Length: 299
Image 1 (cartoon, one colour):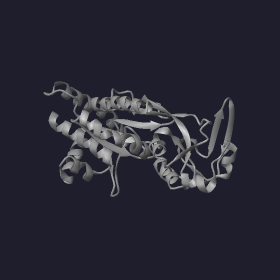
Image 2 (cartoon, one colour):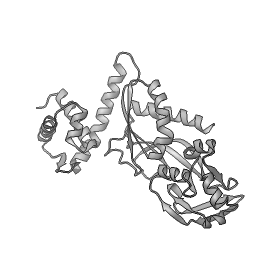
Image 3 (cartoon, rainbow, N blue to C red):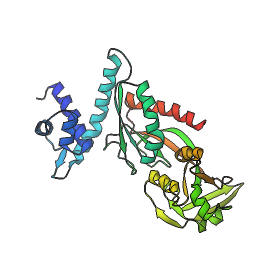
Image 4 (spheres, helix red, strand yellow):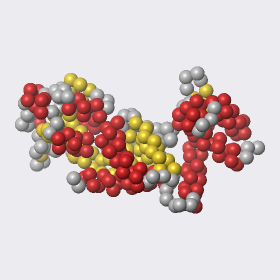
């Protein structure tokens, strides 16, 4: 029979392998050799009488039983970490938080705040998982994810961090070459960078009037962060949240177009996986973001 400490060690290794999709990467993170990591997981599977991971030459993936086991193991390990923190001498929150985010939110929101967070919570380490596709929170081991726009994951627990207006912007060079549109209808003659929450149809409202505009998108980009850079380079007009454009508007590198018209607003949420209680480090990170993003909205 596996001893308790050995089993906890095996469970933590199993979680690392499941997240990394690799025995070698997980072993390196825990200062183990790959053969040792493989043996520990094989012993765990033997003890359970089932296969948790499918091994191929290209990747290591969870079996259906393995995914179910991971879902059950994660809350146990998080609860153990919380219990350790509650009695550990010196007090304070310790541990790690794995944060999922798009490249745009990471660049514009998270990275500028990380230095302050690590100063306030010196015993918490942050692991950023950057992907413009929405992460599988449980499968990728994400403790808290930042999401903008409409939420589609009904199993996640959400905390709204803020709401920002959507803006239409372009660079001064673009405006010099192509002109400053006076009405939404004129936008059909302009070059649009199609990205972000609105796609290729932008709907403008003012005083009860609503004008949908089908854009002539000469450039479609799946990454909102790259779309911001394309707008800065004068490729075309772009739509995004105030928080994405704010530094460049202040510097004059981007100009807001049609300021009397509204494109609506967009929410940013922090999501915890499933209905399990979030780990203390994830709660601390989220509360920090709530406070800091409230300050950003007041700028």
